[in-house]
Image 1 (cartoon, helix red, strand yellow):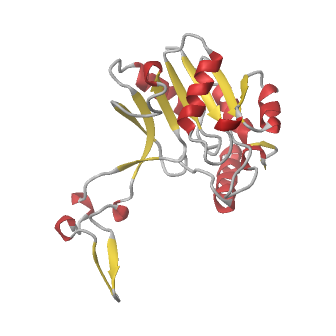
Image 2 (image 1 turned 90 degrees about the vertical axis):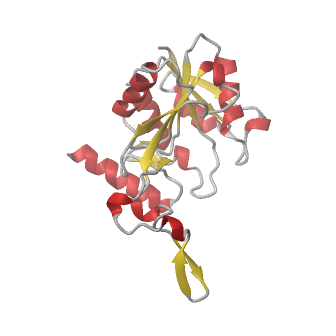
Image 3 (image 1 turned 180 degrees about the horizontal axis):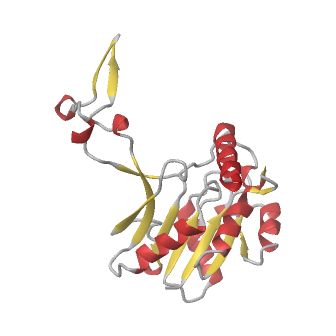
Length: 226
């Protein structure tokens, strides 16, 4: 299966300014995702950015680079049209597109390859999403609301006290691996028949602010020293 690796990377960030090119363990944050993608079974890799510095970093790795047009730049630009623009610009005969977010540096080659294998085995699937189990204490069976000075279950009919009896819920995780079948590009990044790819809590860190950054950096350093 031929899969294009798509790495979107804006220059700006409200939570942590310039985070995609900020240095983490001796290299720009985006470099960690590019290096991981290059070691995986992805067919080709393209970086799409509105930032010249980020594009210059990507060029050093000999991956495809795309400078976004003005209408696809800035904080409010959604990922779907950016992905569609990248696929149309690159061309080629791909079966699917994998979106890899720069802010998930603990995603590994193993994760990417396992997701590719999982998706390639299901000819009916339209997309794949990396997920994490929602802790039982955050499900409807446990969540409570403040009512005056007292709290009450958000849904008394779903109130369950035993963890073993609570339903299992899943959420898209921060490590963001999306696979989109090529004939669905332009419709959605994920949708239709969606395959879940489970990852654990540590692997799912998504960097939004300085605390996330410090946690991710500490975990990466720990993994390097093991």
